[in-house]
Image 1 (cartoon, rainbow, N blue to C red):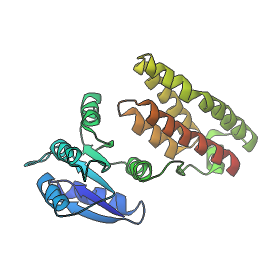
Image 2 (tube, rainbow, N blue to C red):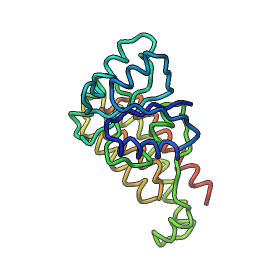
Image 3 (cartoon, rainbow, N blue to C red):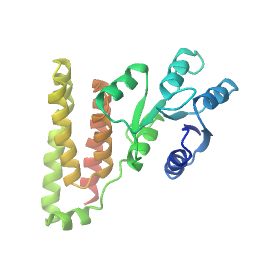
Image 4 (cartoon, rainbow, N blue to C red):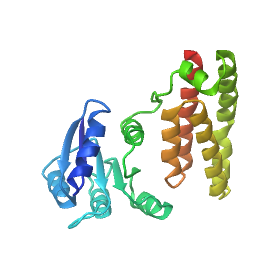
Length: 230
């Protein structure tokens, strides 16, 4: 499976390629800037996903994204913008331009892996988590208490998608974001670091109901798997 990595900064490009390579079996194709990437795509390159730096000379990541979305043969290509700018205005601009995702530098491995899993058919993906025995020691509790904590968290997650989507439909994005942050805190406490990364990633984007539901379903499955592992 081919992954196109576009970045004019060689060090950043190599770091991202290393993270992708460590996430599975991928054929990584690199481009030194947007012009190089566009030429390769026009020559017939058809990657499964593209990770592209936002700010580059000659042709920026945003401009490359616009060209791809306007091309009938390339329009459906999953396209993740990469940037050191993580403010909501920039993220919203990227989303409105048609970006499939957004990764903030410096890179975090789980964010990159989350995009690869979600955009390449990763529904129901197995989000990594801390060993339950390690969680018990860290929290100073026994297995029964950890089971109880996970059961309570599972009950919260069962109703959270409908509640948060309802907030979004009423225009209460701040309330929805606060709810997601509380869920992220619960993931952190219970050692669900893969689920935490997924929640943090969705927090950085414009909150879309379908995306929120998908992430929370993955988090719920992570909780259920963790409870079964005790």
